[in-house]
Amino acid sequence: MKLHLTKTGNQNTFTGHGPGYVAVNGLHYEQALVVMAGQVRTDWNVSDFDALTEAHFDYFLELKPEVLLLGTGNQQRFPHPRLYRRLIEAGIGIECMDTAAVCRTYSILVAEDRHVIAAVLMR
Image (cartoon, rainbow, N blue to C red; front, side):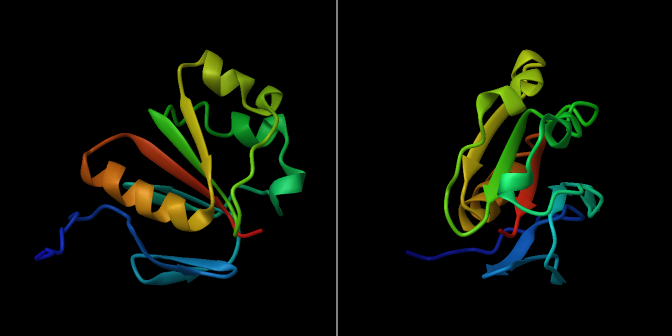
């Protein structure tokens, strides 16, 4: 099978990931990160999965994504639904997966011009 590199223009895409880091457009990040097609944010102040609160999910309400991809570190974990209840009520889908899977899924959805946000936790 022949593979082709798809260029996504000026959109932010994950270019690497590993234990404790992700790379977006070649830049290395080791803290919680929010990635959108046109913006990368480092102001999502959550230290790790166990520290997640409702306020951490409310952060995404004003951004109004179609879907929020939550990268939960090296393993897939699921926050309690009460934490993201307001996102569901606002019609925002949420998918939880390990960070490597978020990197792959985000790249596919952003290439399809979907309004997707990847929220990545390193641990």
